Figure (tube, rainbow, N blue to C red):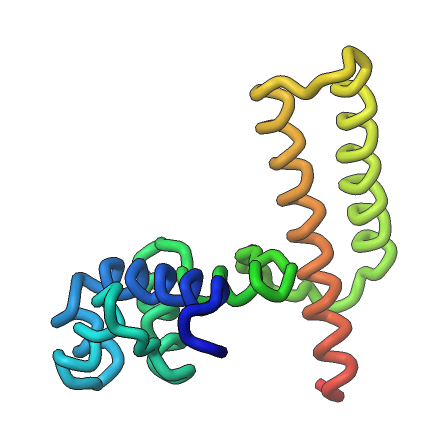
Length: 157
């Protein structure tokens, strides 16, 4: 990534955010096992240095552990025209594929039916948006559960 480019600027801002989330220069240095001066360069807007990949992952993992957004990973995803979503913590329930298929269909149907109902007046209110986001979360949860089950089968468990 070339210094002085818009992407570098966005990554620099993300690095500053990550350092601040880690508790400042000392926290970032401790989290990444780097010297204080190195973490200070990440925070300094006038210094072009960015965290290495292993340091960025450590900072983002620490942020996630504290319930904060992973600043660097989110910025990378945006630059790749992707979204970063936190997957729900679900455990695969072995078997019962019929129940999984029914639940997936139901959650998908709830989302679509709700959206169509909400759009009948050509807009979505704040309350409607909140309900639909819950529907999306439910749909993601069942999709993750199915993915875990399929991954276990694929890995031969």
